[in-house]
Image (cartoon, rainbow, N blue to C red; front, side, top):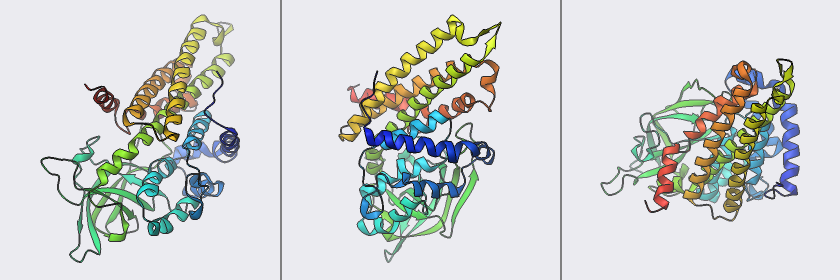
Length: 385
């Protein structure tokens, strides 16, 4: 069926991104995999291309677009080529919504021009060792100085994508204790300069997949954060996180759908070329049935994604809608990619084949942004259960 979710501008952007990936990423991607991260200079190229500024207002050097669909096109094209843009997805997909919604005009003037150019890369630090999806259980603290000029930040974060290259990190921290009535109270957001004394980037984590994204542990020991780097109002951090999670989960759903579609493409090309017992693998009935079943599932995921993208652009995507899209698309992707790897036989287990990397990259989709179990809880709550 013909997709109607994208217009001519989106498709022109798709052509630009596809050509950029072929010229700038595919030839060096194996080097990135070996290094365990994309090079910092690559983010300058993305800035020059305009990728980081699509949804940034024109007054700060961006294009002023309000649609998330451009980011969806980017996800689809990366998946199609079997590559990743490292940790830059967090920069635009996760961090920008917080800056756009809660930064003051003065803060935007300081941060957004560098955000657009790639000179100032952003990451966000929510998760802590031992807390996982329980963000209300965070222990990182930020105590305001007696004169009110700064906060003193102490604590640790983990699984921070983009954490190695980041120049600024949006850190979630407690500015006051939780109350018996509300565990979520007292959390605030700070845009922390990673060059600050006491700010330490720990291990770059050795992950199963997403090998080109720099995921790190962070620690803070008496880090002085100027009061003017508080993002939004003190104590309202948890509500801010809740308001932006639907877009994060939509992005994961889009990425999962795109990975599943790419898996079918990789498998179809392989089985048409691979010969066993004197015939192509594609000629066997089992191969045809497996790929047909996979396509039916991906068609359904595409419909879910497209409907969610339209709802998001209308500002109608609810937390339950996003949870449902994420749950469905990530589960579909897991099944489809597994079946497509199986059609590759032993070669599907070799990292030189994109299906193997896709299999590893996909697994985290059912964990980050809220586990599948958390998604089910959100959906059930919306049903009154």
